[in-house]
Length: 218
Image (tube, rainbow, N blue to C red; front, side, top):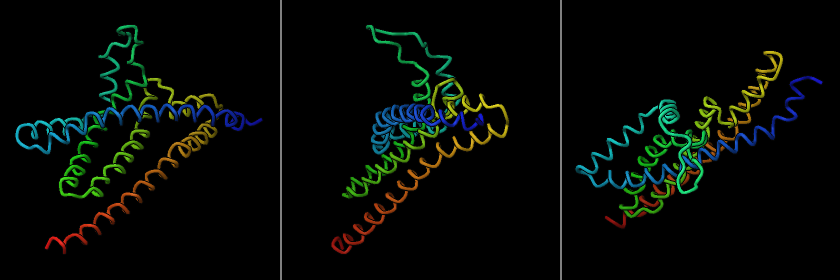
């Protein structure tokens, strides 16, 4: 039997297990990003010293390279510290998730500022534009979580690399890479397209509402 076909027979379930790790990492990062980004958005709207400090923090997080943050955490954070009988939390998965939090929090803070401004203007629909933005950020985090392959986290990209190493020829390796990238990228691109469509429709609804409300205000 062709080695590639033999490898493909076992590839999909192992790859799906790896993708579950990607979604786990993204879920942790988006949750922590919401917890950090929304307060920063509220602080930014206050203006003054508080607003300036929030703006500086957001800009710093936006500029933080994921790989640099990841390797800093990997080397600076103790991996075996536990308290009150709770197992250590600085696993590889948590390290990658925390490295994505600066991007997540900065993106959510930027989107949150716009959402809060829309709510203050009396536009709940405008505030709802925050939801597709957060969903898009989640899928970006799923793709970015592939950085975990660099430190041995068994996510989808790591599975593709590990499976390809077991094939004998370069052609078979490249074919498996192409299949893996398709499995990894195409569903996420479809999700991006769906979010863009939802955002465009919601934006049209918001614009229509403002156009209808404007004559009444005049």
